[in-house]
Length: 192
Image 1 (cartoon, rainbow, N blue to C red):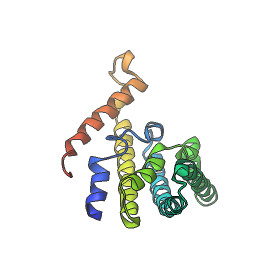
Image 2 (tube, helix red, strand yellow):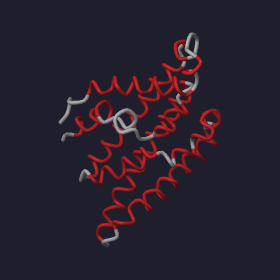
Image 3 (tube, rainbow, N blue to C red):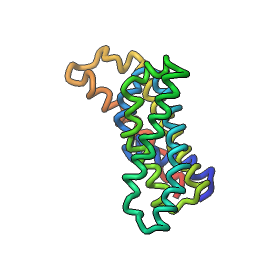
Image 4 (cartoon, one colour):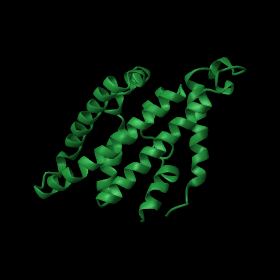
C-alpha cells in the first residue's frame, strides 16, 4: 500500500475513534470545546508521530535480541516519557493550552490509540516511512474526529434543548458519537 493510501485510509476508513474505537476517553472528554479539541489533536499528532519514530527502531532491537515479548511494556514507557516531555513544554511555553487540556493531557499516556498505532505498525509489517505515514494518518483522523465532534457538541442541538430527560448528558453524547461512527462507515471499502 502506498504512503498516500495509508494516510487517507487511516483518516477516513480505519479512523481510530470511529472504526476501531480506540482513544474514546479523550475523544469524549476533550470534545466539549473547539480550542481544547484542536490543542489535544495537535498534541496527539506530535506524540503519535514521535512515539512511532522512537518505538519502531526499538522494536527492531527487541527483535534482534529475541525479546519482542517486552514490546508493550517498553512502548508504554516510551509513550509516558514523551507525554511528560510534551506536558512540560506546554506548561512552560503555552500555559493557556496546558490549562484548557487539564487532566486530559496526562491521559495521552493512557490513550490506547497512541499505543495501538505503535503496535499496529509492527503487526502490519510496515517499514519506518510507512509507519510514520500510518501514525500521521491515525493522528490526523483522531484530530478530525475531535474537531468534528466538538463542533457538533457546541451546537444548540446537542445542548439538550428539547431533548427528553432520559437522553440528556452522557446518553446524548454517546448517541451523537455513534451516529458519527455510522457516517464514517460510508468510507469503508475505499481501500482494500
